[in-house]
Length: 448
Image 1 (cartoon, rainbow, N blue to C red):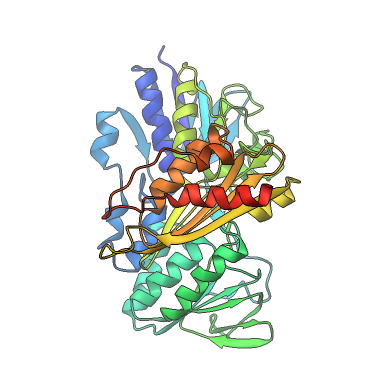
Image 2: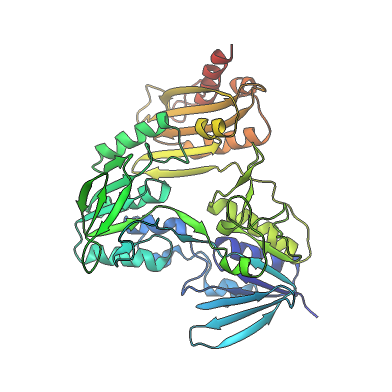
């Protein structure tokens, strides 16, 4: 009898899990369930459709229907998993017509993702608060712009919040970003690196209010304004980018244990406390490679890697997921921003004493036309002199520098090794002295 694999979810992590499972077991019966109308699309692209860089939301669909047919995957859209019985190894489902069915499984993968989170703020039950999680969410925001919206408030200055604010600005809206914490991008950047990014955004015309939490949503029939630090701000569009919370309700009900991050706890094979039951993506906890503490990065790159591991194991193979550094990049207008490993702040919270090295320069030879400014910061563990983090803000070439530093951190490179790196040079591409090495040298001076 063929192996039966049921995957609850049908986006980045889930489809990669299904693909890995199919490659491991050619005869398995693989079923994917999603509550959404669309499956296998990139959530990360939604702000860039809002901004007009990508023509249509349907362009975000990475896996067309033909892919599921080719891979012999049973995709069930607009179908909800209502209950999981781990003892009987069954999943109860209900589709949009109300039809119910019970699916049996040998392996089960939770890829239930995360849900947009709105804190318990007075008035949050009022209509008009928009989130940025699904294609349908993006379509609602897009429609309000087409209907003539002129002003917007985005609540939250994290990665998604700022990408959406930029997208709204690019569509002609006057955008205001409200952030409770004293800086933008609090997970990605230290305050010294975030300051320059904020100044750039403000120069482009986006109003940013830091250190001001939302106290109330006001309006009669719908939200027409917010109160932040005693100040009332009215707008046509209100986007909640407070963050997301792992969707674990169904898993908990089935007896799956949660970890410290309140996401599903898994081992290195992405297996939960229940045999044959796995969890991947935004709903699954993992381990930070530097401090070995539980982490919940909720990044697409992490999701697909976890999916490949869980899919392989669910189909009878063997694979492990060692952990994460939280490497991430984005682009705000013409500025690229990247991070890998621990920031100075998060290292301090983990009890790690650090020194840092920061250097500013150009992406090409000073005399070469088109050279862009770039700033590199490395975070170094003081005792062992290992590089444990890096942040880069620049006009170009940020991604591959972050990737290189990520590999160095994974290989436990010391700051002295980084300073002596054998790097390349050509006037149209880079300076003779690589800025990563110069940042390392700046850190070494502090170590002395």
